[in-house]
Every structure is written in C-alpha cells, then in structure tokens.
Amino acid sequence: MKNIYKLIFLISVFIIGCKSDVIEKNKVVQKIESLDMNVFSMKGDKIYSITSPKSNFDKIQLKFNLEKTTINIFNGEDIKYTINSDSSTLSDKNKIVELIGNVELRTINQENDFLYGDNLIWNIEESVYELMGNIKFENKNILLFSSKAKLGEDNIIEFFNPVKYIIKDENNENKFVIKSQNAFYNLNTESISFQANDKRVRSIIYF
Picture 1: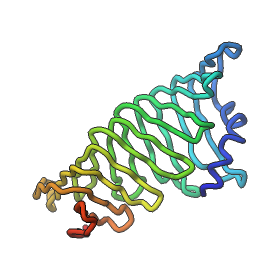
Picture 2 (picture 1 turned 120 degrees about the vertical axis):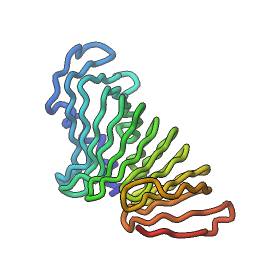
Picture 3 (picture 1 turned 120 degrees about the horizontal axis):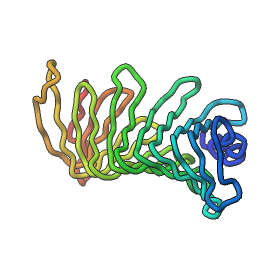
C-alpha cells in the first residue's frame, strides 16, 4: 500500500480537474469552487476522495487549502473511514493532509466508531492518523478521552496519557469512570488494553 501512495502526486494533476469549477487560473492562488477530487492508484483502485465547497491552490507553496472538508478513505471498493473537518490543507506533493477544527473520523462498520479531535494530521505514505486536542472516542460500549491519539494501519488507536474512559452498561448509560495512562483500542477485536510507564499491560477488556 505504501508504494501506491507514492503514485498520488503523479496522477493528481489529472484527478484535480474532475468535477471542479476552476477560476482565476493565471494568479498565484487558484480558486476552486465545489472541489470533488478522486485519487486512484495506477491499477485503477480508488485510494481516497476529497470534497469541499470552496478551496484554493497555492501555486508557489504547491498546497491546497480547503474549507468544510470531507475525506473518504477506501479499502478496495469499500469506504474504510470518513473524516470531516472545518478546513484542511494538502501539502508535500499531496502526501500530508492536515484537518483543522471539529475533526470527526468515523469507521464505516456496523458499530460506527467515532473519533473526535481539534486537529488531525494524516501521513499518507505511513498510513498514520495523528489527532491532537480534546480527543474523544465513542461507540456503543465505551467513551474515552485524552489529549492525543494515533491510529495506525493495524486499526489500533493509541490514546496518550492522561486517559479517562467510561464503560457503558446495557442501557447505553455511563457505568464506570476510570483513569489510566496510555490506552489501546483495537477496532478489529473491539478490545481495550492499558499500559503504565513500565510498558506492562495492566488489563485487557473485550466487549
């Protein structure tokens, strides 16, 4: 997958022209209305799509600035994650995506896990999503709060100290409120584990 991401820049010029109304072409900042950009691999597989009602491209910095961004990240034919934010930027040849303000990352599965934060940086080549500020994770089983979180391609979310988590009861009401150091939530197994500074796992809870 990492090799596929390296192809993004090579095809981005072709993709950007799709479904967009481009104005002010000869200026340093190129304004784009109703951006709907799809990025594919050389094999024709869709990697991700980005939509924004208003955006611009800085021809000097080679950076996109987008408002009210929605990103769909694909795994084959299916959407794996959907991310929304107030604004975003694409830089470093479209390899770094930064989402700013009211970030919401949602997994597309039966449970619909939600991960919120103030900002998110996505390193496309490393398939890492790093969230900072007022982190909140929620699904039908648990609420979890921290100041920083990181989601890797292994579908494990790492929450950084300090961590506060709330286990819900069968009526979806808060039942236990617990504080810990680093926590790890596995989206595949729906389990959470905890670590102290000595890196020993204190406990593992399955839902």
